[in-house]
Image (cartoon, rainbow, N blue to C red; front, side):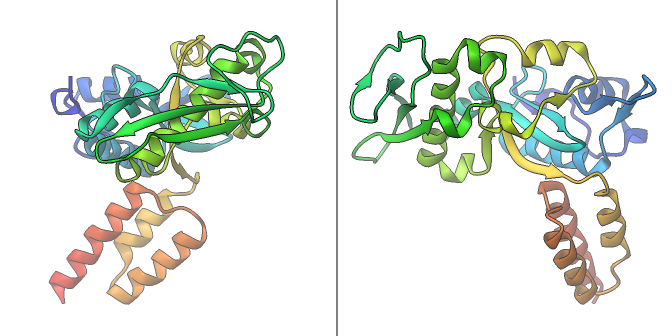
Amino acid sequence: MSTRELALPESGDPNDWTQQEAALVEAAGLITRNPRGGMDLAPRATVESFLAHCRRTGLDPIARQIYAICRKGRWGIQVSIDGARLIAERSGQYEGQTAAQWTADGREWLDVWLDQEAPAAARVGVYRTGFREAVYGVARFSEYNAGGPMWQKMPATMIAKCAEMLALRKAFPQDLSGLYSTDEMDQAGQPQQAAQVHEERMAEPGEEDAVIDAEVVEDSPQWLDRIAKAATVQDLGAVWQDAAAAHAVDEGLRAAFAQRGADLKAAA
Protein backbone atom coordinates (compact mmCIF):
# COMPACT_ATOMS: atom_id res chain seq x y z
CA MET A 1 0.00 0.00 0.00
CA SER A 2 1.38 3.44 -0.88
CA THR A 3 0.74 6.74 0.84
CA ARG A 4 -1.18 7.85 -2.27
CA GLU A 5 -3.88 5.35 -1.35
CA LEU A 6 -4.04 6.51 2.26
CA ALA A 7 -5.77 9.89 1.86
CA LEU A 8 -3.09 11.74 3.79
CA PRO A 9 -3.88 15.42 4.42
CA GLU A 10 -2.74 17.85 1.76
CA SER A 11 -1.85 20.47 4.38
CA GLY A 12 -0.86 20.68 8.03
CA ASP A 13 -3.98 22.63 9.02
CA PRO A 14 -6.22 20.32 11.11
CA ASN A 15 -9.24 22.46 10.23
CA ASP A 16 -9.00 21.17 6.66
CA TRP A 17 -8.80 17.48 7.56
CA THR A 18 -11.48 14.87 7.11
CA GLN A 19 -12.10 12.38 9.90
CA GLN A 20 -10.06 9.76 8.05
CA GLU A 21 -7.15 12.17 7.59
CA ALA A 22 -7.25 13.13 11.27
CA ALA A 23 -7.21 9.46 12.25
CA LEU A 24 -4.16 8.85 10.05
CA VAL A 25 -2.32 11.77 11.66
CA GLU A 26 -3.09 10.38 15.10
CA ALA A 27 -2.00 6.88 14.08
CA ALA A 28 1.28 8.33 12.81
CA GLY A 29 2.16 9.47 16.34
CA LEU A 30 1.78 13.22 15.79
CA ILE A 31 -0.01 13.60 19.10
CA THR A 32 1.54 13.69 22.59
CA ARG A 33 0.02 13.44 26.02
CA ASN A 34 0.28 16.72 27.94
CA PRO A 35 0.81 17.03 31.72
CA ARG A 36 -2.92 17.62 32.19
CA GLY A 37 -3.72 14.25 30.69
CA GLY A 38 -5.02 15.69 27.42
CA MET A 39 -3.70 15.27 23.89
CA ASP A 40 -1.69 17.86 21.96
CA LEU A 41 -1.07 17.92 18.21
CA ALA A 42 2.54 18.33 17.09
CA PRO A 43 3.55 21.80 15.83
CA ARG A 44 2.28 22.53 12.35
CA ALA A 45 5.82 22.65 10.94
CA THR A 46 6.32 19.09 12.18
CA VAL A 47 3.05 17.94 10.62
CA GLU A 48 3.96 19.59 7.30
CA SER A 49 7.41 18.01 7.44
CA PHE A 50 5.92 14.60 8.15
CA LEU A 51 3.51 14.86 5.21
CA ALA A 52 6.37 15.96 2.95
CA HIS A 53 8.46 12.96 4.00
CA CYS A 54 5.53 10.62 3.36
CA ARG A 55 5.16 11.96 -0.16
CA ARG A 56 8.90 11.89 -0.82
CA THR A 57 9.53 8.36 0.44
CA GLY A 58 6.16 6.79 -0.43
CA LEU A 59 6.19 4.98 2.93
CA ASP A 60 3.03 3.89 4.75
CA PRO A 61 2.37 5.29 8.26
CA ILE A 62 -0.31 2.68 8.95
CA ALA A 63 2.23 -0.11 8.41
CA ARG A 64 4.58 1.85 10.70
CA GLN A 65 7.07 2.29 7.89
CA ILE A 66 7.12 5.97 8.89
CA TYR A 67 5.81 7.84 11.94
CA ALA A 68 6.62 10.79 14.19
CA ILE A 69 8.24 10.83 17.60
CA CYS A 70 8.97 13.44 20.27
CA ARG A 71 12.15 13.32 22.36
CA LYS A 72 12.66 15.84 25.15
CA GLY A 73 10.25 18.25 23.53
CA ARG A 74 11.87 17.99 20.09
CA TRP A 75 10.10 16.27 17.22
CA GLY A 76 11.59 13.92 14.69
CA ILE A 77 10.30 11.50 12.04
CA GLN A 78 11.09 7.80 12.21
CA VAL A 79 11.10 5.13 9.55
CA SER A 80 11.36 1.42 10.26
CA ILE A 81 14.31 -0.59 9.01
CA ASP A 82 11.86 -2.33 6.68
CA GLY A 83 10.99 1.09 5.32
CA ALA A 84 14.66 1.83 4.72
CA ARG A 85 15.08 -1.50 2.93
CA LEU A 86 11.99 -0.72 0.86
CA ILE A 87 13.44 2.62 -0.21
CA ALA A 88 16.67 0.88 -1.21
CA GLU A 89 14.75 -1.81 -3.10
CA ARG A 90 12.69 0.77 -4.99
CA SER A 91 15.91 2.27 -6.31
CA GLY A 92 16.20 -0.80 -8.53
CA GLN A 93 19.86 -1.23 -7.58
CA TYR A 94 19.58 -3.06 -4.26
CA GLU A 95 20.99 -6.60 -4.48
CA GLY A 96 20.73 -7.80 -0.91
CA GLN A 97 23.24 -7.84 1.90
CA THR A 98 25.63 -10.03 3.82
CA ALA A 99 24.78 -11.74 7.07
CA ALA A 100 25.73 -9.76 10.16
CA GLN A 101 29.08 -10.54 11.77
CA TRP A 102 30.47 -9.67 15.20
CA THR A 103 33.93 -9.25 16.70
CA ALA A 104 35.54 -8.94 20.10
CA ASP A 105 38.92 -7.68 18.93
CA GLY A 106 38.48 -6.30 15.40
CA ARG A 107 40.55 -9.13 13.91
CA GLU A 108 38.30 -12.20 14.04
CA TRP A 109 34.73 -11.82 12.75
CA LEU A 110 32.11 -14.39 13.78
CA ASP A 111 28.88 -15.35 12.03
CA VAL A 112 27.16 -16.14 15.35
CA TRP A 113 27.72 -14.34 18.65
CA LEU A 114 27.35 -16.73 21.59
CA ASP A 115 29.31 -14.97 24.34
CA GLN A 116 27.41 -13.51 27.26
CA GLU A 117 29.50 -10.36 27.00
CA ALA A 118 28.50 -7.84 24.36
CA PRO A 119 30.53 -7.79 21.13
CA ALA A 120 32.92 -4.94 20.52
CA ALA A 121 31.46 -4.26 17.07
CA ALA A 122 29.22 -5.58 14.30
CA ARG A 123 29.38 -5.25 10.53
CA VAL A 124 26.94 -5.73 7.66
CA GLY A 125 27.62 -5.39 3.93
CA VAL A 126 25.10 -4.16 1.34
CA TYR A 127 25.33 -4.98 -2.37
CA ARG A 128 24.43 -2.40 -5.01
CA THR A 129 24.37 -2.75 -8.78
CA GLY A 130 27.58 -1.50 -10.35
CA PHE A 131 29.64 -1.76 -7.14
CA ARG A 132 32.61 -4.11 -7.25
CA GLU A 133 32.23 -5.18 -3.63
CA ALA A 134 29.72 -4.93 -0.82
CA VAL A 135 29.62 -1.64 1.06
CA TYR A 136 30.16 -2.35 4.76
CA GLY A 137 28.85 -0.55 7.79
CA VAL A 138 30.79 -1.16 11.01
CA ALA A 139 29.22 -0.13 14.32
CA ARG A 140 31.15 -0.14 17.61
CA PHE A 141 29.17 -1.17 20.67
CA SER A 142 30.81 1.48 22.87
CA GLU A 143 29.55 4.23 20.55
CA TYR A 144 25.91 3.15 20.34
CA ASN A 145 25.13 1.32 23.59
CA ALA A 146 22.38 3.28 25.35
CA GLY A 147 22.27 0.93 28.34
CA GLY A 148 18.54 0.30 28.06
CA PRO A 149 16.77 -3.05 28.57
CA MET A 150 17.07 -4.10 24.93
CA TRP A 151 20.77 -3.23 24.79
CA GLN A 152 21.32 -5.37 27.88
CA LYS A 153 19.13 -8.25 26.72
CA MET A 154 20.05 -8.36 23.00
CA PRO A 155 23.35 -6.49 22.55
CA ALA A 156 24.43 -8.39 19.43
CA THR A 157 21.10 -7.81 17.68
CA MET A 158 20.97 -4.14 18.56
CA ILE A 159 24.47 -3.32 17.35
CA ALA A 160 23.91 -5.34 14.16
CA LYS A 161 20.88 -3.17 13.39
CA CYS A 162 23.05 -0.07 13.70
CA ALA A 163 25.61 -1.58 11.34
CA GLU A 164 22.93 -2.37 8.77
CA MET A 165 21.66 1.21 8.75
CA LEU A 166 25.22 2.49 8.32
CA ALA A 167 25.70 0.18 5.33
CA LEU A 168 22.38 1.12 3.73
CA ARG A 169 23.19 4.83 3.98
CA LYS A 170 26.62 4.27 2.44
CA ALA A 171 25.21 2.26 -0.45
CA PHE A 172 22.25 4.57 -1.12
CA PRO A 173 23.23 8.09 -0.03
CA GLN A 174 20.78 9.81 -2.38
CA ASP A 175 17.80 7.86 -1.06
CA LEU A 176 18.72 7.34 2.59
CA SER A 177 20.82 10.38 3.45
CA GLY A 178 19.73 11.78 6.80
CA LEU A 179 18.16 8.55 8.08
CA TYR A 180 19.33 7.24 11.43
CA SER A 181 18.14 4.18 13.29
CA THR A 182 16.42 4.56 16.62
CA ASP A 183 19.10 2.24 17.97
CA GLU A 184 21.72 4.74 16.84
CA MET A 185 19.76 7.56 18.49
CA ASP A 186 18.83 5.76 21.72
CA GLN A 187 21.27 7.84 23.71
CA ALA A 188 19.30 10.95 22.77
CA GLY A 189 16.68 9.97 25.35
CA GLN A 190 13.44 8.05 25.68
CA PRO A 191 10.64 8.95 23.28
CA GLN A 192 7.36 10.32 24.59
CA GLN A 193 4.29 9.00 22.81
CA ALA A 194 0.65 9.78 23.33
CA ALA A 195 -0.78 6.38 22.49
CA GLN A 196 0.13 3.37 24.60
CA VAL A 197 0.32 1.23 21.48
CA HIS A 198 3.29 3.27 20.29
CA GLU A 199 5.03 2.89 23.66
CA GLU A 200 4.50 -0.86 23.59
CA ARG A 201 5.73 -1.22 20.03
CA MET A 202 8.84 0.81 20.79
CA ALA A 203 9.76 -1.81 23.40
CA GLU A 204 9.02 -4.90 21.33
CA PRO A 205 12.02 -7.19 20.73
CA GLY A 206 13.12 -6.98 17.14
CA GLU A 207 11.46 -3.62 16.54
CA GLU A 208 13.85 -1.96 14.13
CA ASP A 209 13.35 1.73 13.53
CA ALA A 210 15.20 4.57 11.91
CA VAL A 211 14.84 8.28 12.45
CA ILE A 212 15.04 11.05 9.93
CA ASP A 213 17.34 13.69 11.30
CA ALA A 214 14.75 16.43 11.07
CA GLU A 215 14.18 17.54 14.63
CA VAL A 216 11.96 20.61 14.93
CA VAL A 217 12.28 23.06 17.81
CA GLU A 218 9.11 23.74 19.77
CA ASP A 219 8.87 27.35 18.57
CA SER A 220 9.06 26.37 14.88
CA PRO A 221 5.62 27.91 14.07
CA GLN A 222 7.28 31.30 14.46
CA TRP A 223 9.37 30.55 11.38
CA LEU A 224 6.29 29.92 9.26
CA ASP A 225 4.89 33.24 10.45
CA ARG A 226 8.12 35.09 9.63
CA ILE A 227 8.29 33.42 6.22
CA ALA A 228 4.74 34.54 5.42
CA LYS A 229 5.53 38.13 6.52
CA ALA A 230 8.72 38.44 4.43
CA ALA A 231 8.03 41.28 1.98
CA THR A 232 11.11 40.87 -0.22
CA VAL A 233 13.54 38.16 -1.26
CA GLN A 234 16.14 39.90 0.91
CA ASP A 235 13.83 39.70 3.93
CA LEU A 236 13.26 36.03 3.22
CA GLY A 237 17.03 35.48 3.05
CA ALA A 238 17.43 37.06 6.48
CA VAL A 239 14.77 34.73 7.91
CA TRP A 240 16.57 31.76 6.33
CA GLN A 241 19.86 32.74 7.97
CA ASP A 242 18.17 33.05 11.37
CA ALA A 243 16.40 29.70 11.00
CA ALA A 244 19.59 27.98 9.84
CA ALA A 245 21.52 29.42 12.80
CA ALA A 246 18.84 28.03 15.13
CA HIS A 247 19.04 24.59 13.41
CA ALA A 248 15.30 24.85 12.72
CA VAL A 249 15.31 24.20 8.97
CA ASP A 250 13.67 20.89 8.13
CA GLU A 251 11.87 19.54 5.06
CA GLY A 252 8.66 21.40 5.85
CA LEU A 253 10.35 24.77 6.41
CA ARG A 254 12.52 24.28 3.36
CA ALA A 255 9.38 23.82 1.25
CA ALA A 256 7.81 26.91 2.84
CA PHE A 257 10.90 28.99 2.05
CA ALA A 258 10.90 27.78 -1.55
CA GLN A 259 7.21 28.53 -2.04
CA ARG A 260 7.47 32.01 -0.51
CA GLY A 261 10.55 32.77 -2.59
CA ALA A 262 8.73 31.75 -5.77
CA ASP A 263 5.76 33.95 -4.82
CA LEU A 264 7.98 36.97 -4.14
CA LYS A 265 9.85 36.55 -7.42
CA ALA A 266 6.59 36.23 -9.32
CA ALA A 267 5.24 39.38 -7.69
CA ALA A 268 8.43 41.27 -8.52
